[in-house]
Image 1 (cartoon, one colour):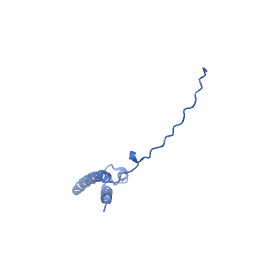
Image 2 (cartoon, rainbow, N blue to C red):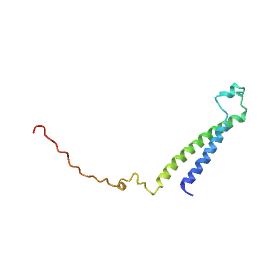
Image 3 (tube, one colour):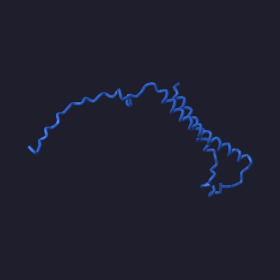
Image 4 (cartoon, rainbow, N blue to C red):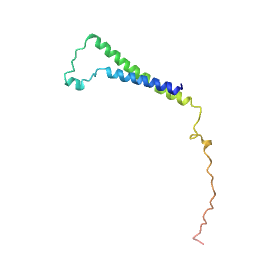
Length: 110
């Protein structure tokens, strides 16, 4: 299994978990739910702790995802042993130059 595949699988798992955690959270701004009667302000004791856990989970998963993306970029680019000839100046063939004679200039003073 290559490094690229490992990072890809880990990023997909974290992305899926991040989507699930975000979808489980209750909206805090009210929005449409408050206008339809869903904006009851009373929270039962355990709901606040669940909300804190989901908030911390969101930030943790987002940080892990950012770190995985950055590390995957570093490791994938650093582990590349084959260099591209696009940026290798020695691989660019020399363009043959042909000397063209300078056009004869006529001196108007002659």
